[in-house]
Length: 89
Image 1: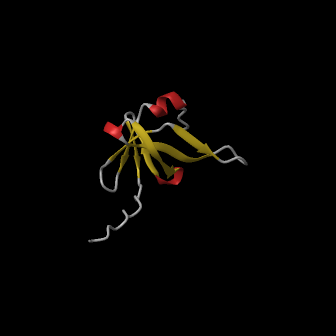
Image 2: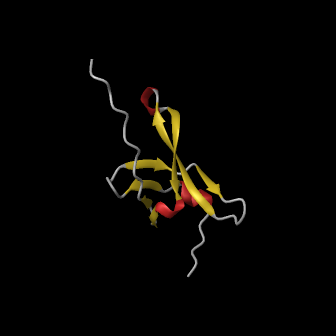
Image 3: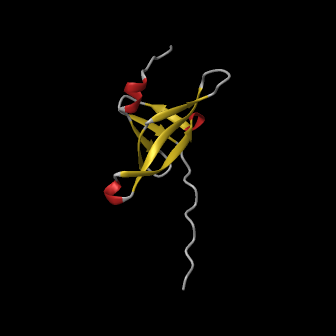
């Protein structure tokens, strides 16, 4: 059974990381393969700046890491990169 979904419907679903339960945000763009037109990745902006109003970075979540697309959320398996270590003074 093939389920058809528009990009508008996909953008309304919140992306949740199943590894730590963190809400990552909403899909703002998709990355496609030029050769076959398949979705390569979901692009989710990371809020930052003053009160989360400005976008500093974009999370690139490979489509193979999408666990499930449900009626309200997209569950992904996203391993965030390790945070940089601070030097003690």
